[in-house]
Image (cartoon, rainbow, N blue to C red):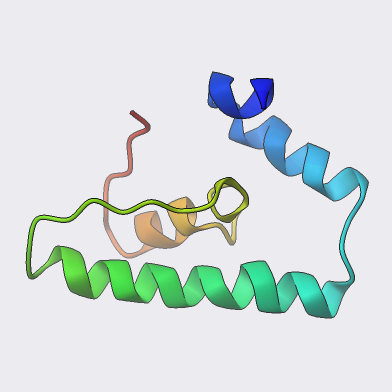
Length: 79
């Protein structure tokens, strides 16, 4: 909880990788969902003002929602 409260996404990602879930589960629960969320966010943001809440483990890493949105050209800034 303290890592999340500090906004330290790199440490959050490292903590998650210390006790990893099976690869197939991680792909289904994080990887595939991150891609779908980034695609949906890209579409929705263009249509209306939007507040989006995402589980903390979907945010960090090169395949996290933040980086996927940056690759689409968005500027992502933590609040």
